[in-house]
Image 1 (cartoon, rainbow, N blue to C red):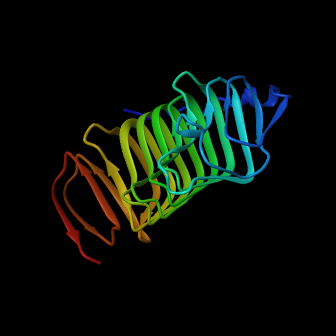
Image 2 (cartoon, rainbow, N blue to C red; image 1 turned 30 degrees about the vertical axis):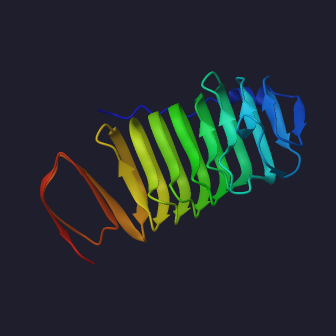
Amino acid sequence: MPLHLIKPITAYAQSISNESFINSCTNITAPGYYILNNSIQGIQGKGYCIGIFSNNVILNGQENSLSMSFVNGTGIYISPISHNIIIENMSLSDFNIGISANGHNITIENIKGLFDGVVISINNSKINVENAFLLDNFIYGINATGNNILINNSNIIDSGSGLYINGSNVRLDYIKLTNGGVYLTPNSKNFSINSVSVNDRPLVYLNYTSNVLISNAGEVIAFNSRNLYIKKF
């Protein structure tokens, strides 16, 4: 079955002319272009710093950061009712979850995540993660459950199990994992994996394969396969 990955529709971004500046933890309840005017530490009483409860929102961090002090919480919460969201150009650190993406048609790009439980938690469909640098996260770098997920050009280092994926129509392109790997649940299907490495060796993904010798692999993921022979480095 072919993949049917659909990148988030970003044409709406060109039509947004109003800019709003964010200086502290807040809720976004209207469409618009929002700019993180400075770095912010802490969370609201609801357990997150910035909550998004609207469609058609761009949040540009301008290379600023959201952070906590080792207390459970979420940096950015995207509600299930929110569609067409872009989160870009920021760092997140010391949250239990850096970005909780529960909406639809979401792009997360140019993100640095440090010392989180999970930097990016995905629980919906049509999600793109691009240019992420995730370091020292003790559960996962990215935890993705849903459909039509693209993770591209990202570096995940010392981040628990690395990538956890439970979904379909998932594409992984140009990802480097160090001291972690990719975990696909048995329910996962319709995968495309291109230039993914684990500890500087290629990730090998097999489906309905038998009688194969595999060597020099950083990780082997095999579904519906048998008689595989894995040669140590």
